[in-house]
Length: 372
Image 1 (cartoon, helix red, strand yellow):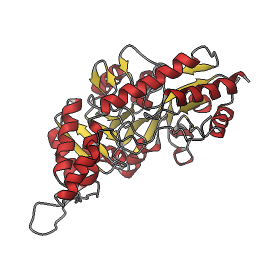
Image 2 (spheres, rainbow, N blue to C red; image 1 turned 135 degrees about the horizontal axis):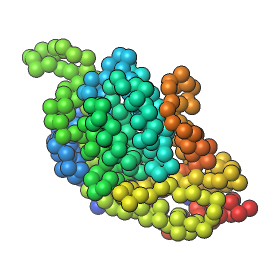
Image 3 (cartoon, one colour; image 1 turned 180 degrees about the horizontal axis):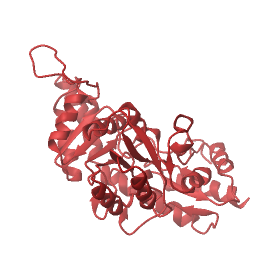
């Protein structure tokens, strides 16, 4: 097999060079400061793409979650529901605001927030201030029952769509259902600006307030005056230029990611030791990462070691937040599925630059490791 590294999900610039054109414009106009035309247009183009009224380009998806929580009024001592099976960036901003995360379990149908566990959580904590839902690995959570519960208790929903840009739930883009949605453009995401994020909403005033906070809450005055706590969270004009170019190829990246998942499933679908990440009729996933769950006869770390021996990158499923040392004392409401998925799950290489030959190599290693 080739010694060329096969990555999990690495940056993939457009063949057409869109990104370089926009970055060059920033340099040609000597406008490489935090604000500029690329920032404004990236916000406009993203809002138009997903069908919302406004968007704010920020330094990271984590910053977007933080400002969304602040915008819905989360403060010291407030309870916020958050799925346990996620990356820490979904939960940490709750702490930034002085809130208290209560972690919710996942269901097998979606790998995401379990509406039945959420129902129990609402009964236990009716004073909850907000709900953060995550669309894990590009899989949409089952939003209808989650939205119904939020409406019943009059609690705002924030969608962490960091991994699901381009995913549709019943024909509508994830990130656009809640009071606020967030996207991430980290280096491994389906489109990247090297680092960055976006806060989106139909609440124009809320997004405008988030922009204000993200530029150190500088009041409109001839001198530097600050009446509120602010943050240095704004995206730069250069980075936004990369984002504008990447947005042009989003649909192509979704198509390739879905192709990779289908390829794996076709080549390895006969192996009874593998359970595939779920697909539902209402979910058109971007399949950011293709993930599998192994039965008790296969040690996931043995399989990952076999892949690494062939210079192929893989990684475990997220370790649930309620099992993390930092969050060990936080309440968890749900069954043990999230923990089982962590113990038996693997993220397979899903790089949008992968060739069929490279996909074949990955499949051969997996098949050999499982059968032997």
